[in-house]
Image (cartoon, rainbow, N blue to C red; front, top):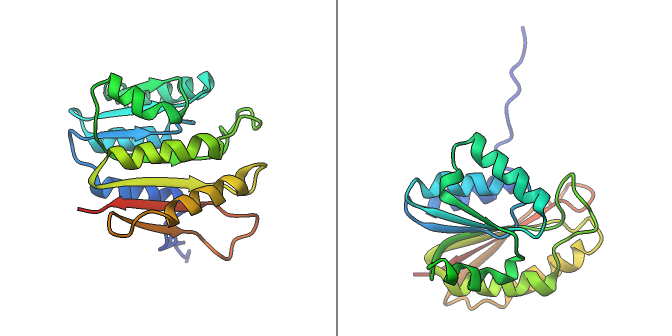
Length: 198
């Protein structure tokens, strides 16, 4: 007799990020993927905003945008996503040019492109201004998720900057929390979630 292995009750950091955003996004909403990477977050956001919604995704690497375009086509979601080869610090200007003044969610997955050039990484000097822009444009009840990886060169510094950014947010305007497995080795990823209060 075989014993069926059950999946863990606690979601991974990425699963948790997707689940909390899925709970607040509605069909017709506007969402941002601030770091497109391989397009997994882009796909999750595009599913949640529905046919009438829009996702704007940012990445500085053409390789990332190519992979994301392929993944979006495979999932028949490309028509609701605009992929932009710019850094996420250009978010406010880019969205304004597209007629989007408010967003319901923004997803950041920091670090480097898996399978890409590990020397090209996100950095606090662009990430923090992008977080400021996302928070300013965020609708009441909307969320920002930030997945940080401290284990690579520059990762600990960026994680610290994101942590400090969340801690200084007004508790009257925002809820901010951190989610992380504390007994895993090699600097496991950490999720920050920010909710703009109604």
